[in-house]
Every structure is written in structure tokens, then in C-alpha cells.
Length: 376
Ligand SMILES: *Cc1c(COP(=O)(O)O)cnc(C)c1O
Image 1 (cartoon, rainbow, N blue to C red):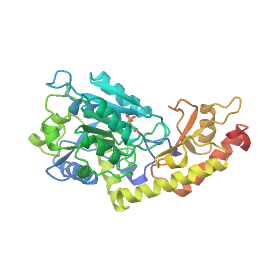
Image 2: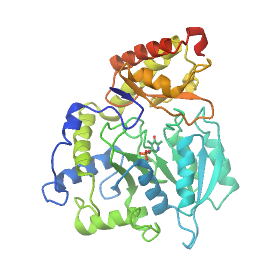
Image 3: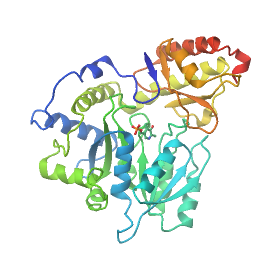
Image 4: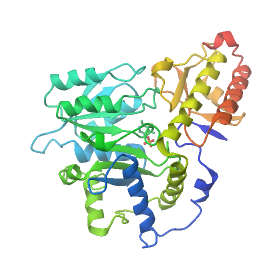
């Protein structure tokens, strides 16, 4: 089955095969492997040894995002309570807002359409209007709609306003460029093992400036979600140590995926492959009569959305089943207001797989009685 959901993504056989071993995470043999992964990820984020650290956490992307929010946005009881501004241009921005609110952090919403990246000027204006905002939370690649927010440009206005930034790069990291050294306003950039690095699910990672982590001790109000505690544990017990049992096979397999990623040319090569995947899908689906959700100039390389065909009786789940019978799995939900279908362009897939998916789309549309002129 070709997985285009997107995330967890299609993986290479050698990545999956690396799962089939028993490993003692606390054993000294595994520590060097874990340390090497942390260092490679720090470097990949543009971090520098001694100035930036890689802080992993077990679990899904929501967990590492919550940990970053709790660790860095000052709690209400802190000397100066934090306030988090979030540009609201997609489902993952909604999720960040909920994570922050449920952690008791004050959230300010910046409404924005989900069909383009948020304008940095709008962020600048919101910051100027509310001096109590301490942080801006940005979703780099919005997997709800397929747009990309311009993280370097938004970071520049955050930096100019003397505020801090938290970046949800879960569906961006490894594909879209990111340089922590050029963005000193960033407290944390977070991502997971199972998206653009093409590993298996199980772990989240935050790359952070050391001095910000050290200054955030005691803020998280949660032991499990405290990145400062992850840091302190590393200081005390070594960078190969864990606080709690990790999904160690997923971590081991992630190390294999990361080495393949680096050998393939790293971020620029991955971005080029995903862009081409997306272009083939966007143009091919359009030729089948499907209407893209985004204008091409606002289309990011990670996921493309298309309006569901406006024909009576069209039902997404039935369409997904028809595609599955043809060997392709796409998302069976949408989180845009308009009914859409979401097709991922990431994972261990290339032009051949995208053309295979287009053939499956053609067949499934025919099976459901969607004629070309009905589709859009
Ligand atoms: C996938 C994703 C997440 C995390 O999702 P989980 O299901 O918690 O792993 C967060 N943000 C974005 C932008 C994502 O694409």
C-alpha cells in the first residue's frame, strides 16, 4: 500500500527492518547511537554545540509541542505571565491554541485565511498592539491546508519586537530550510520522527538554545512535559540517557532514516523531491478535473488539498476505499471548512509513486461516477 496520508509516511524497507531488534535503552551500547542522533539533529537545525541542544520526548507531535509551550511560555504564576500569539491559519494552529490554553497559558488569536501564509506585517501589528505578548507560536508547514508560513520573515519581526518564538515544524523539518543560528528569537523548533526525515512514529524532538532552557527551570508545571528536566537529566546522567522508557526501536530506526536522509543530500534534496512530487500531483489531479484548494503560488511542498467533487452522493470514505483497492491510501478526513481531500507528497515516494497515485485517482473517480467536468 502506498501511504500518502501524510504522516506517518511511507518508509524505506531498511528503516522498517531496523525495528526488528531487541534493545536495552539504558545499556551503554545504545548511548553513543542516541548521542549521535541528538548531535545530527542539532546540526541539521542550524544549532551549534554548546549553544543549542536537542531535547527528545516520547510520543506524538502534540506532546513535544505541548512540552515546548509549557517549558518556554511563562506560567501564570511566574513573575511575568506569558502570553502567546498564534496566527490562526489552519488546523494545527487551532491545536497549538488548545494545547496552550489547557496548559493554562494565555493565548491571543490572530485570525488569518488558511489559503496563504500569514503576512509578517500582520504579526508585527499584533505585537505592537499588545506589549504583554511574550511569545509567537507559528506552524511552519500547515498540514491542515498545505500552506507554508514564512518562518524566517515572521521570526525577523518577532526579533525586532523583542519577543520569543516557538515553531511547530512537525511537517516541515528536514524539508523546509531552518537555521536556528540565524533565528536567535526561537526558543524551540519542534518536529517528530515520522514525517520529512521518513522514520517511524514514536518520538518528538525540540532543538533549543541552552540558555533559554536553563532559564526555564520550574516553569512547565509538569514533570513529563518539562524540557528543562530533559536537559538537566542529560547534564546529570549524560546525553545518552533517558528519563523514562523510550520507543527505542523507533529511535534506532530513526537513526537509520536520518543517515539515509543525510546521504541523499539532506534538506535541499528532500525539498526538491517533495516539490516535484507535489507538482506532479497538483497538475495531474487538475488534469483529472479536481480543483486544488490552494492557488499554486501558495501551495507548499508537503501536502496538497483538492475540493471534493461536487456530485450527488460523493462520500470521502467511499472514495478512500476505492483508492485503497487501487493500492493508495490518503487521509479519510479533512480539517478545512470546505469539504476537501488531503493527499501527502512526503515520505519515501517519488515521481513514479505520484503517477501511480494519479492513475488510482482516475480509476476511483470513474468508479464513483465522477465525470471529468463534474469534478470541479
Ligand atoms: C503531524 C503534525 C503534528 C503532530 O501530530 P501528531 O499526531 O501529534 O504526531 C503537529 N503539527 C503539524 C503541523 C503536523 O503536521
